[in-house]
Length: 333
Image (cartoon, rainbow, N blue to C red; front, top):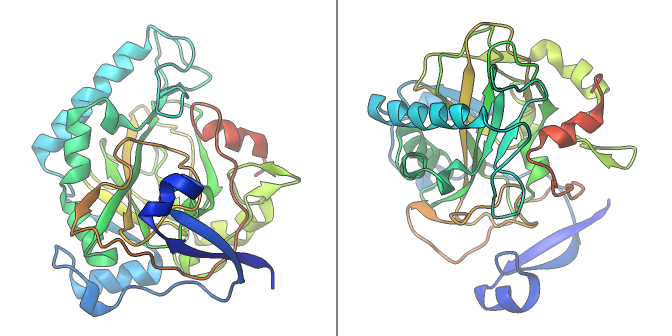
């Protein structure tokens, strides 16, 4: 059994010791993954008991009407404005808290055919995106699943313009962001109608209950699982699609990916990640935000909860997005 980490949380020690949310690290051994929160801890919300059970069994849940039509209209308008702005650029641009570009462009991007594929932390440059992160129906569902106390973790927009080559290789989100426990949920809001043709999310149900797969290969952090893991699981992958305004709630350990957009319609996802308030980050965020750690449901308890798992720390990205990391995987990963 390899040595891993046991955590203790102290806000007073944050400034003195670690700089990572007051976490001090001690070596221990690892046993098995964390379990779902107890029934008594769940907040009230829009999900039925059957939907809650489905999420924990499969690791994802499709939710219709996750945001209001007014919220959807505002998000789309802001994103369309960024696409227009991107015509004036030929390489990633803008500034983030980490000093990396905020707006990432696909290799085939041109002024005539813009291919804006990623906006990092849009909540920092749009009041509309920030308002949605703080209040939406999907967040109420998240509070039912891992609440009642929930923090904002990070956000991004992943976009696939018509005919864009952008794909997302199979990976598990948790391998990019180790925390003291695994109660993290990504909310993928559909800003466009998502179809089978425009590059929908593909998930492998139940993989959140099994192992964490290596994302390091031959000493390189590729941000993707190995070709053998893909071969072992791709037959079980399920596409998640539906109308704009819907959302997919996805467990941080769930194996997932997506193919290029082969259609003539865009596919844009606004992805907000939330964590249980007692889940503390163990490494600097790969998507840092001034709003990281804001309590968006419930209250702050000043407690930390630890689960048992093992993984290798990820590489902190230096490029505009994780697409540059996944490019290291090669075409076959």
